Image (cartoon, rainbow, N blue to C red):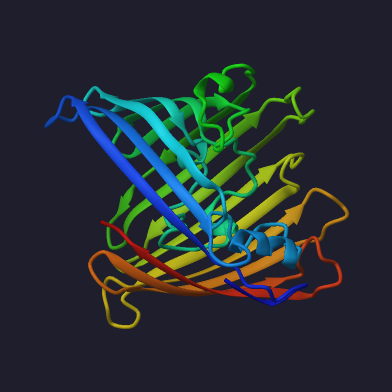
Length: 325
């Protein structure tokens, strides 16, 4: 990632190695399966700094990227997920990340879609890291779902010792209800509303925070999909009072059906009077080089970086290579 404007022009580079496994131990070949999921990850800096540090150089409220950092080895997930009643009910228990299950849109994937955390995460939500979590999802019909869950508010992805995470217990709780219709002439859609709350924590003297999220995902054709999201939070932990994003993904713009072009716009309204409203535009194109390899190029433009009052604009160019096997 190469910054454009802002307070510095220092570039950043990083790598990310993911290991993912899923072992079906119950109900193999049926809808009501019981699976154990285990994932690990190694993130490493390449050169002087990772792209995650560019946020400080820009003075942005929302980071131009967060995933590509120098975190090292971590255990991400180690959980059991059980499906019941023809998969109408799903129960998850173990070490997991709440942000995977509430407040996200369909194009929210930093590995193959947008990179800025306005679009690759839900920056207004004060998510804890990976840790002990219980989640239940119910789908009474094919078009409706309800997901609720609770996680340890002290969870830290860097802490792989399960015992230490049970020493202190305050909760991050969440719920999301969604409608997933298929419209004739368009395609599948998703319309969701979510709530979340994180307790005040005595360790670190951290205040409580809470908020809500509205999400719209809709396929308009078999090649075009759009999304919109609005989030409100008290902002005591994130300094984000309101945020909104709209965007689209289009397959085959340059004639290759497996390529993807994306464009999205975001507005962030901070809680603190010391910060100012920040707007972000990101565009990218992802080339499907081989069946398992993708090469993406993208551009971010940031107007009025919220924590840099002397800068009117900032931005970044990035390139991303991904392969899976």
